[in-house]
Length: 307
Image (tube, rainbow, N blue to C red; front, side, top):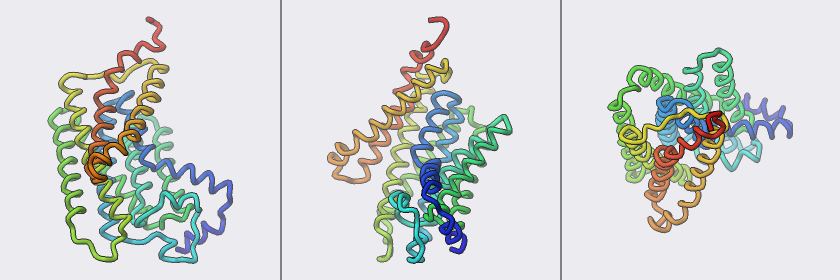
């Protein structure tokens, strides 16, 4: 806590605003943008690698939170204060840091495949900034951030090695997605059926269970999307820069609209159960991986000199 108190003593309103913005480098939205831009515009194999890294990092992070059940810094020490704008996104248990794990996995994957040194420096810097922002805001301890780095970087290294060697094989991609789907099902069933102690934080347990259903739906959607691409779509990622920009902006917007619009109808249909979350993310990922790519030939013509 002494390090957190030292950071608390040097906080300034302007710097706090900057750190509150930079902490989103480790958010689910930032991860989704990076993964989809890679999958749509650069290299489908690389995009799938990042998605696998995010899956294993999220699963490990959620399991560790519920296994150790370490409270947030201001809960352990009521005299410690945090940057209030960060409180809403810092519910549940503290250890390890999910934002740091997401940033380490996402940008670590990019650093491992970067061909130029300055790109590697940039991606590593984003990991460091994301982790430090969590400490500055007071929502995590150095131990939370350190383990978060490990939780994110280990899958990044492992997936980098595996996909570099086997990523071109269709069977390997199906195997990886199948394993991910099986693990997400096992994890979710465990959370739903396990006899948790009376002192379990209900909000954190609910969040972990929701993430289990999210991972389950996402893995099933990605498995279906990869199958569709292998068998029929085989979409191309290249396009002129104006086409790439429109492809990403419109595609991301539509993906987020689906994510938002389906929430209430599916909750009503499934009675607010976790199945609603799984179906919503299945549809969202299937749209992003197999439906939206049907429009890609159009974007190849935008900005092309051959028009």
